[in-house]
Structures are given as C-alpha cells and as structure tokens.
Length: 150
View (tube, rainbow, N blue to C red):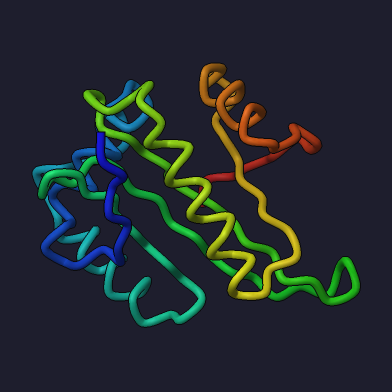
C-alpha cells in the first residue's frame, strides 16, 4: 500500500472532511454534513490564521484522513510553543492500516519544524481505542481535560 499524500485542505475538501468528522457515534450526533455553511465559515477562519494547519490525507485520489494542527505561543514552560493536534479522523475503510499513525507522525514532525516544544492532544473519554493508539505513538495520558460548552 502506498503512503498517503498529506496536503493542506482546500474548500473543495470540506464535504469529505465533514463526512469523516461525522463518521462515528460522537460525530454523528454533533456534525451536520448536509449543511456545509458553518464549516465554510470555520474554514475561512482557519485558513486566514497562519498558526492553523488543516490537512487531508489522500490515497488513490480519495480523501481518507484529516487532522488539524494548531500552534499556540505560551508563557508557561519558559515561553514554549505548544502544538495541539485536533480532529484526527481516518476513513472507516482505512482504519487499522497505519494511516492514523502516519497522519499523527506527520503532525509531530511538522510541529517540530515549526518550532514547537510540546505536542498535545485530547481525546474523548469514551474513545478507549484511540487512547491506546495515542499511547502506542508515544503520547502520555498526563492530564485530565475539562470542557465547557458556551
């Protein structure tokens, strides 16, 4: 199997990216693939910010994965730059074939190239398979995360 092409997402990729976001029990309850307007607005904000890197993975001309990498300058850790990996999704037909590891590996290397000192991510507490996946990639479950809807 050939390595995927990882490239910046374009507006034309939005239907496929949103479909990936919606393709699990959590995403199915919160995403609306039939209404792309809010995703287009978010995409415009993401692409206007040089600290945001929304990418897709393509294999055989098909979008098979996505993630977003965000760089955040911080005062903590002696002025460190944190890289946050968000919304890692792999097409159902591609799961278990190494694509997720390839995508996250790309994000870690890109974060390093961009001067990040630390890479972090969160994963919903119910995604136990994802937790094992991230631990296999060298991530440590070192913190408890909290969220509050606004």
